[in-house]
Length: 493
Ligand SMILES: [Zn+2]
Image (cartoon, rainbow, N blue to C red; front, side, top):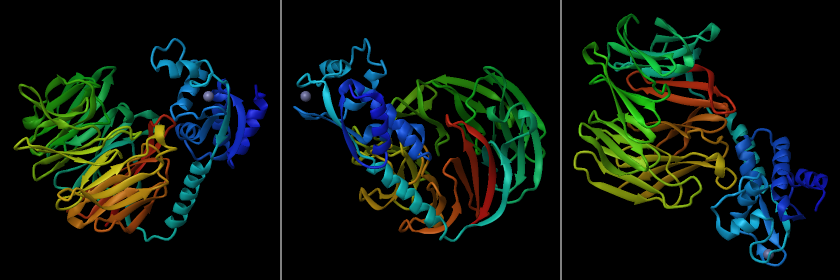
């Protein structure tokens, strides 16, 4: 066996330039852990998930008799070395041989391991180039900044005010309404905790506030949007405070009550009429369509929840985008590009369905991009970050089924949304890179104006068309993607 100290030294050298070493197959897991250590020390800006992906993705193993072992061998050897394959019944004879530390073809136990850090170094270069670019671009004009923010920014239907949940001293929270584009507080309403609360306009006159009263019990309050005074209140089952949608024309609010249950709340006439619907594991949504109905993705299909049950609209996996003209779009595809990706389109009135093949790149985000055009984006998935390190934003022509332009974003962290919003009426969109929020032209994808970004933040944006105001929220992200305290900023476009 190769002495362990030699593997550690090898990993340290290989993190900087391509190196090869002879090892026992059974030492692969140790070598991957040593590479993780070395890569983490050498490239501290990468997340642990990215490091694992790069440690495995940059490694290749060659049997002296049979040649290079297949791509699946390395993750299997890693699991085997961690004891995770013991007693496993999946995987077949290939996994069984690797689990025993021998080559599945010849039974040999020695391999040549090569580690090539070029992908990780390309990514580091891209991040440096992006930092240089950040210094050159003209910035958007800030009208107010630095307001405390935790979650749940929403805008009144007439765009005269915004509401949000902000942190308070002592771990408590408060719902605050501001006059749009200013730091003028109109009212505030205390809540027990900023992390388990959400606020949303359900009409021009009413804001709905949901907050956790105790485990599994949600307090629902309807407040006067001008004064913050409570006009109705009730209690309901648990609710997800990070999801939810409201239709301010009908007063309907929908959110997840649990992973497989939709909660709907009718608020018109100051009723708080609650119902729940068990729909199966929710992948995306619930959201409200232009027809005022509730839509949700459950197990690779988009459904509309109707009085008689769930209506299967079409296949769809990753996201839901409505067109006011009466169409709904869903993205497909897999993070590891292991199958076909599709843009799924349904006509809400007629029920007709269409699919446009999209290669194997997943479509994780969809926004409207102008007449017959959509903006499509894919995020970086931490599990495949070594092989697919770039996020992309693409302007797509639906009738021609082709890409008009394509932007690769090489410095965005895994799980961050590259597409923040799209304003086709004005011909621009807001995207994020690791260093910048970029206002880009929908015509050609070129940068118009920028706002500095910090790659470790979770960013969301809202656009107030009648005021030409752009709101940006940022939350610091914890190691497990939990959102910490953040700030609210407003820009004039
Ligand atoms: Zn062999």
